[in-house]
Length: 183
Image (cartoon, rainbow, N blue to C red; front, side, top):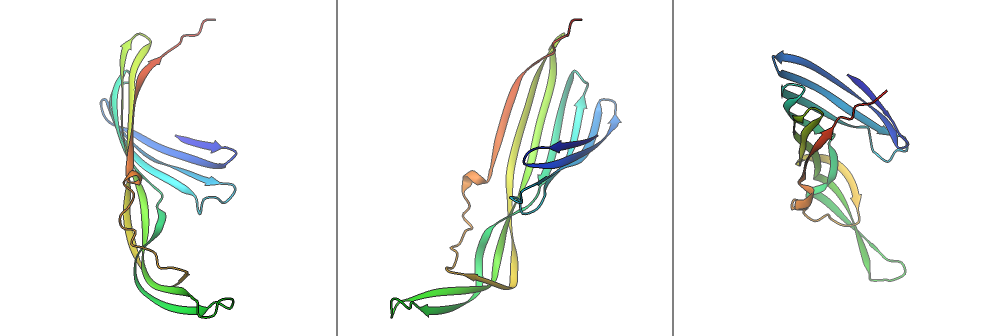
């Protein structure tokens, strides 16, 4: 399956390849990509995923695992820097400091997505459906050496991430109703 998206914000596309592995057992994998028109995103973003589905068209369960584009999440620990001071011309005896960071941890975040969904026919034209997502932000750092990062202050230790940014869950369920058309 190949798909596309055009919007006022940007454009993207998707591709998904699937195969029946055994009776009532299916696997697929694919990806989704998006790029904005206005440069608000540093680069295109994307998501890759793999699915396993067990069951029939009327009764099934699907487990999906995916991961997305990594994003910079600030500066972590600073290991080496130099300091320079400059006297304010309008306030003799008062100085401001500038720092040149040469070694630090660049922090990153990459989402891990887990989806479990299912469907069960409950009447001739109705199905009970559920679709549940769990997103966890995987955080890691890369040591940057030989940098020349000029800053007006030394960043504080940011290893204590906001717990609310660690992840979230979406649980949903409902009834799907098939409307037959007359004429």
